[in-house]
Amino acid sequence: MRAEPGGESSRPAVSADGSAVSAALCNKHCDARDPAAATSDRVPVTASLYGRSIALHLSDNDVMGWASIDNGQAGDQTWLDRSFDGGRTWASGSKLGTTAIPAGRTGWRSQMYNVDDWNSGGIGALRACGKAGDRAEIACTGWARVDWNAGSRSKAAATALMMNYDRGSGKFAGWWTSATALTSLIDNIRISHMPSYRYAIANTYDKLRTAEGGDFTNSYLDDTGWWGLAWVAAYDLTGDRRYLDTARKDADHMAAYWTDKCGGGVQWATDKAYKNAITNELYIQLNAALHNRLPGDTTYLQRAKTGWDWFRNSGMINSGNTVNDGLRDDCTNNGDTTWTYNQGVILAALAELNRATGDASLLDRARTLADASTTSAYLNPGGTLHEPYEPDGTGCTSDGDSFKGAYVRGLGLLNKALPDRPYSAYLDRQADTAYAKNRNSLDQYGPHWAGPRTVTGNGCQHSALDLMNAAEDS
Image 1: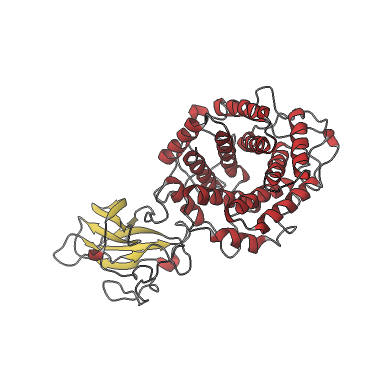
Image 2: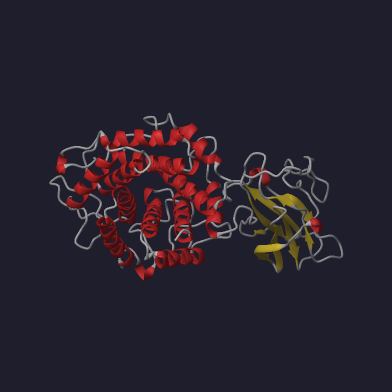
């Protein structure tokens, strides 16, 4: 989180009645500042209770907010809650600035409190709450934050994603989904030029490099591929060679499990002989990417070319030019679900391999595949991308919640490689729909881009960030 020098020194915060509240935060200003000093007043969310109007006010430049209650009577209360995990908990910031309407008035407001904690990197959110003085019930607005680090759709989505980031562990959520989330964040830093969350790259690397099998390998070869591509992206952004060296180790780990079953291909896991699409798509992309960043390389280029030759002849690409999940034991297409990520990663792989070889036929084939997936009524009911399985009950933590992000990321990379940018309109339409129908006041997204927004979590959030990145970069 960006910290500004020159703010006020820390001092204890007190409520209007003089009672102590949680320890004051000091950024540009310290907690418990008079709203009369606010440089602006934006009201993103409101609530009502027994005729009272409760509002959250934000002063974007001050990076602070306050609560108000109106149409009430003496004794009605209002206060702020502050959360540093996207509104999941707020015990450390409960009932900030609790105050009551004084005698002879029908409305009142709390003092101003900081949204973020720049000293600890806490990315915060506020909500306003209130209650009638003679009743027990309370009402609260939705959570919202200032536009600090949220000046565009993608920046706002990145900031909401970082509310899920655990600095202590270096993870966003699960293992491979942390890799895809990190990649979406790195892409956003590159596209939006917002460096505020750049610290997460080195932190994740340092915290997790010795986890699992070491150097971001584990028994699932597709997991290793996701991490390898994350470190390629990190290298591109930072120039730090250790990230590229780790990506090489990841590619080499995958290559060790290329087997003769079904004529070739990398198996799904070290102990699972299943040949599936995603593992081999990632293998092609990672090896082509390494070749494009290693002068004089021949090894990674040959792996990528051999991988594509095997994949295109494997039968996993069906007659409709969409990609099924994998191969049966008899090496025929298993007819399993055409997950969105299987339609997208291959596009990125072919774009990267075209860059390595200059073979225009690779882009022609990628365009054929992209045309099939972007026009598929099965994948785009009503014109909006939909994962074949989009549950609400997982809280956006299932593997599938990350799939659409990988799809639009791959489509965006292909789109940039084509001079006519044929998929810009598709990406813009998806982004406009998700922004309008699947977003809350905190710029958190759920699984259903066409709406309604139901739940949120890492997979849904980084997928939405991938979408906003791809649309802005198109």
